Length: 312
Image 1 (cartoon, rainbow, N blue to C red):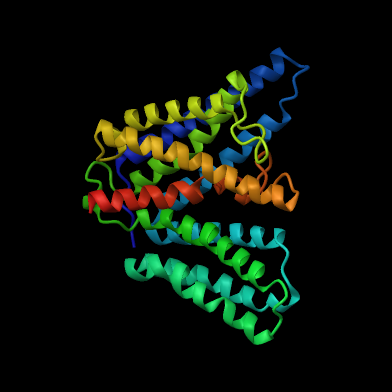
Image 2 (spheres, rainbow, N blue to C red):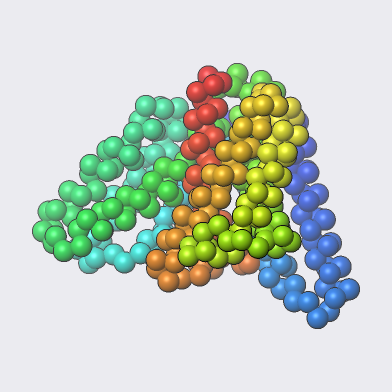
């Protein structure tokens, strides 16, 4: 399947590259002007962003099938990372195969545009299937925690993330302005920029923690600043990339900002429960794959269903 990429998408990608160039130059200048300031983490973060943007852009530009494989791989890496963090009983090792097999099947429904099975496969059928191999083993100690933990991980890393991929197979008529790829880019850019905006506003003005026992560095000022920035950016970018009017774009910006915040802190709660700082080290400066897609596990399903409900 080919994926028609509109000029607006290419222009938006060029804008992202320009932002990365500006960030790279700014960090280099900061290091030269203030040698005592350690820019190592910032440098690693921006380098990782270069790699992530390059891989994302390449997958998006080659073809729709390549893009779906890319998101399937993203789900695989996120699930693998999640499973490496959580305690898994010896009796449950064989059920992990079911979890991994759910990934290609879920993405097949997307490739085939089979919405009915896409939307119920993991929440219903995998939910019903997962306990069966565990029951057959006969080990009931820790059963509820094991099956619940595994299904939650599938919902976050596979079901939630797969909504990004389904945006690409929506009809072209859903977004006559710039096509389905633009909707995906709009969502991903706003979600990731919201994370950055909340971080920056929190650093500049942050005084009052929002959820101090879960994520002490998240502040009310950072959250409000990020929300305002994301809403404004959503309205500015909407005419260029989407069919949304100013009010709808502002509403979607608000949804993305708040959902992104809660997706982030939910994964923070998971890491705090496991007594770890980062979910992994795959992305230098960022941590692991879960650290990078945490916000998207919330924003992707909400954005997708709002778009599908109002524009199909």
